[in-house]
Image 1 (spheres, helix red, strand yellow):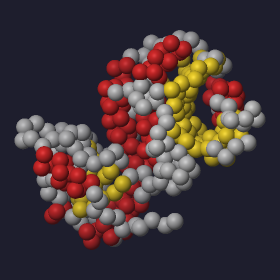
Image 2 (cartoon, rainbow, N blue to C red):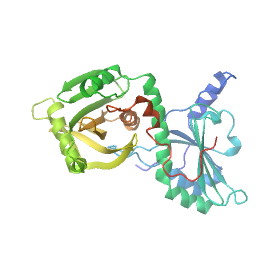
Image 3 (tube, one colour):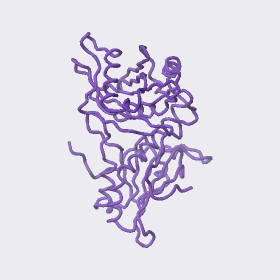
Image 4 (cartoon, rainbow, N blue to C red):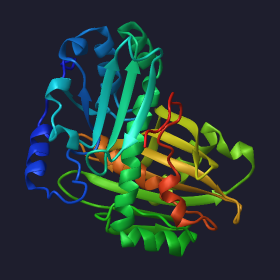
Length: 351
């Protein structure tokens, strides 16, 4: 189904008004809006022209690895003349500035906690609309990754304060590792070098698994190998209602890519799981990392079972939790720095 491409001024602005009315004059007020809500400050007419449509299309991109289309961000747009104090409390803001008299090249810059906390403001400045359109289209993934990683770092901060003690205990007892998971995950099942922890509720079922196997050199990290390992572990440890039912990977909808976690190589797997010989299924994401002290591969995975419900926010909560894994010898204090917030951005952070 095709989305309405024109964007709306959404309810997050009303939330901002309420927060503004209730906040004290002392200190930085709390930012408004839910995770992944973004306010675009741009002239109304420019928003409808190709330059504005280019930015809209970036924010309208679907989240990868989900069984149905779900957009990356919730968008609102406001004309600069209406960008008043209450709207400045939004947690994520994109400012578009196009002026040939002020700028000679198109670039990005960002600042933090200017009007509220936590908050990030990404400014895109350009001398003309044609350069702006080309730049935004070329750097679309950079913009997506920027806000996604900012939100995941916020989630890690929240998990530090409130997380599942059960998962933390299991990760420590079985693997000698630290792992923080959403605090509603409160039931578990243990196996050999394995645990599965889950939550139940009306919004869907959050699941986290952790398992390990011997490291056998670089060949350990190819797609066929890691997927075969996943299937063998899940078949034994996550059976279905009948003996012939078990969890498996839908290999036709699986992507594998190298990433960096705490400065070290890791492999991210993202895709769909299914219950073999049953009708259950959903999305999953995992990190595979090398524990050099114990010569093993440690895998942490989050998966969701939420039929007929949106899965984007559930999966993002689990994905953020994967970055909290501390292998033996690693320090928990490194957690907040493990996701760089900008990979390729022209310009520098503004203080």
